[in-house]
Each structure stands twice: as structure tokens, then as C-alpha cells.
Image (tube, rainbow, N blue to C red; front, side, top):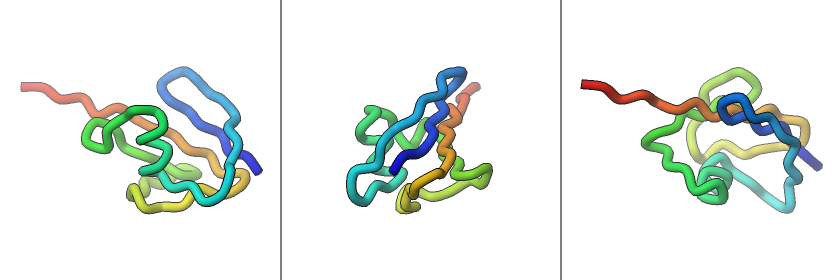
Length: 66
């Protein structure tokens, strides 16, 4: 089973081994949910959302300013 991961301009296919959530993926990539928004198949999702075979996951960086 696999899913598509997109971060910025980088797109890759990744394998799913067992249960995987958005939080697990963020941790694996050493990214913080405080600086990233996750989308699953085009819809914004929370960290507890499960990733399933064929899903398209995209992380969008939140830009802070002042």
C-alpha cells in the first residue's frame, strides 16, 4: 500500500507499513504541526487523521509575519 506525499515542489510515493496518521508522518519528517497544515485528498485534516492506500497528502507551510 502506498500514498503520494507533496511538500512544496517535491512529490514522492511512500509506502504504508501498518497504521499511519498525519502526526506519525509529521514526526517521521521532523516537521511541526505548528508550522504546517495537512491536506488529505484536497481537504484540510487534523493530526489524528489516518493515511490510507491511494491517499494524496500535502503539507503546506504556514507563514508567520509581523
